[in-house]
Length: 299
Ligand code: G1P
Image (tube, rainbow, N blue to C red; front, side, top):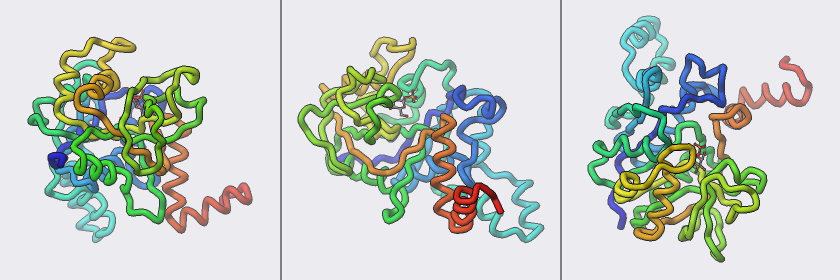
């Protein structure tokens, strides 16, 4: 029922202040989780969901993100000459040739809603996905990778209603997220619910639930009109959450709960968690980590 989602907006203009000093000279999106930069997981997640064009909303000083997905002739040439085929493969074929990467600048740090609006002219009035670049969604081992994002796309395809991925968080953590209100509906993993309201970073007392917005959205083009006209919100920024609130009344908005492990790699604890969880999926690294944790030694 929903028009096919072909484009994904990934806002990468953030300064990464929560990860300083590591991010003084390196974009937070390029910090490695096990063997690949965070942004590579996010881009691959989008592509696995059928996305054909990635739109980075970026800023000066973060060109290295685009370079990561571009050709590096000298490196490729040298690896080829040395016969290092495996490494060459990992450098050369990060994303399929058919997927286009476009980038646009966000001239000022005016919030997530503003970042999405910066991509408007590239979206051709089509529905689109938004993926936050520092969130890694690690689906359970017995599921296909990127299962959750695929479910989000499927739910849009079936309903044509905007979709927000949510996860359960501890009550003490709701203040870090957008939190949804489902009224008397019960949320269960991968069951679609209608969102009645959402609140950005509520106090524990005001939070309508423990269901937090993860950073994965499928949105109708109409949200762009809303973003154009909403007033500046919290922190002097144009908040995506404010636009979504207004979308509930006009187009409706659904939630889809995930049971995946979600890591916010924009902070130190989430970043280390992602590194450990991803490493544990590699048998050699798992053996090493076992030794380290059981014996307190690396040998
Ligand atoms: C943003 C969104 C928030 C969401 C969070 C997920 O907040 O505004 O609704 O829950 O991402 O990581 P930020 O973390 O950018 O402050």
